[in-house]
Image 1 (cartoon, rainbow, N blue to C red):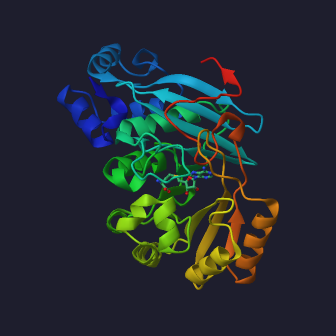
Image 2 (cartoon, rainbow, N blue to C red):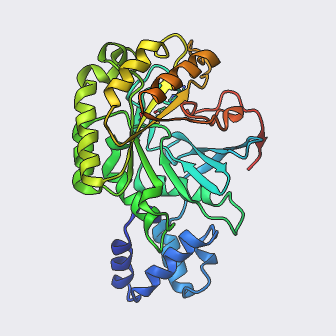
Length: 349
Ligand code: SAH
């Protein structure tokens, strides 16, 4: 059986046409998928009964099961989804004022091996399908009360999104379409470890999204240690590719920097970073390390954070410190993994 969320609008229209149904049935089906909360074809009450049963015998609507649903006191919610083949991924809903953001995964595990991140601890199993990524979005959207809509998407969960671009872009298409989730491109951020050929591919395909580049170190010697794939890439080509994206898109770039106590948080790191980013239309997003069970890294001291911020601000860099959210349920940045070893609060699903 095919996953209905994994086929395009055009494929669905063609499937309907072969069976003698008019094209507007596809629009009706999309409406049920993206703007309602039905769980089965049977509930799609404006479709002819025969069509409902034909759909049910050709397609599955959901391929994943919610294995765990965790809720934190700050309003963050995390789903651990079990996929059809037993693979497990996590995705997160974040509440911040009026914002309703979701953080989705793009792969089962991650191959990048960043030493401070939980997602790559066991390597990568496979890419997620388009349908599985849309399913993350819909599952999270349905956690909101009926009158609330998702406003932002960050592709910052498990995996390297640019290594799965061919499946990611159709999923983001469903997110942005008026008859999909209706989220504007500029409210969607794709976060990458920095793969220059893939950044160029994105430039060719679509430059309407925000691009975030995970830098984490201001020089190659240190970055090679923290982000092992850097050994084959290097900071300069990554920044050059990011600049090309900016030239084409006009969208302010974001650079992310996980601040690790005693490792990349010293005065000279801040100064090097300022020199590296000076003159760019960019936002530096500094994320104090969120603890990962089993890893030896330290959250930086308040004094180190203050010094780091001051040096960058004085150098005229647009810097923002990311507020920690969802750490109570291991849903904060870098804490997503295939299993949830410690869960603070569990809501049975
Ligand atoms: N592979 C992509 C998407 C994964 S999200 C990428 O590398 O960008 C990666 C982001 O998670 C990093 O930029 C960082 O902001 C965050 N991160 C990873 N581990 C973290 C940790 N232990 N503490 C805080 N942030 C972390």
